[in-house]
Image 1 (cartoon, one colour):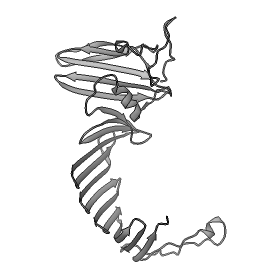
Image 2: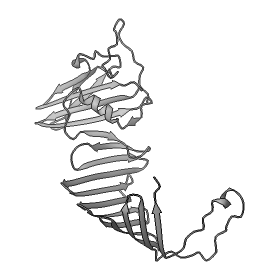
Image 3: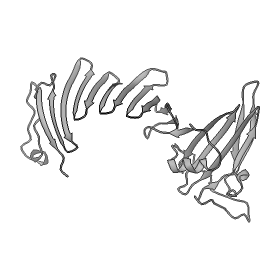
Image 4: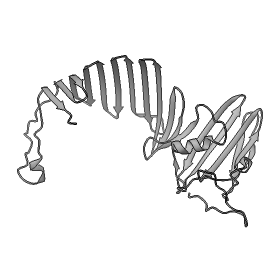
Length: 297
């Protein structure tokens, strides 16, 4: 649902900070439900708070050796941004999020995250409301390795994790994404691994979407690179191997082998008139090719 219109008590003058961040006063109360079900609920009203008094915009509560703080406010475009900071037994956890003017949860921008961090010390790896596409929403960790996220869309749940190790000119990057439906059935998956040691690099990836799979492997050293790819869908497969030489950023020579390419049994129809006739390029069914690419300045 949309945000309630801004109101304030009669006679109160709205006070905004230098970023036009209109703070919402929050109150807090404990959630008690037995030995382990404890927590804090933050609530508040939507009249303007006093920007120079943090107690008027940050709800906070102490319970069972823990400190919980919350902050929320409206920015210039009408979006509401918020953060919850918890410190339990010496361990800090921060969650950040945002809602657009229509009330839809969205990922907070980097400037909005920096604005929220002004009001209290956040965890080094905060959990951020995030979105991979326009149709899903979820959370991701933000900070040092590894970085993970979970997203929920239309009958889909996406698990995402990224990791990186680096030591001077050496690096190793790993990524994994798994998509399931609400019953836990895997609908798609993608994995990649890339290693680099000075001028040498090696990378590989595997992706599956339904019955279609794509496998890639690439190795490079200075001016030379070798890349292989195989795609499969049911009983069909398409393989390609490329050897490239690129002495600089503007010049590349590539030799390709495509063993599975075959011309169709029925020749394609060639347009003889109309807009497509002038720009028509006949398909290439060669198994072996040499291509030259020159990028003009």
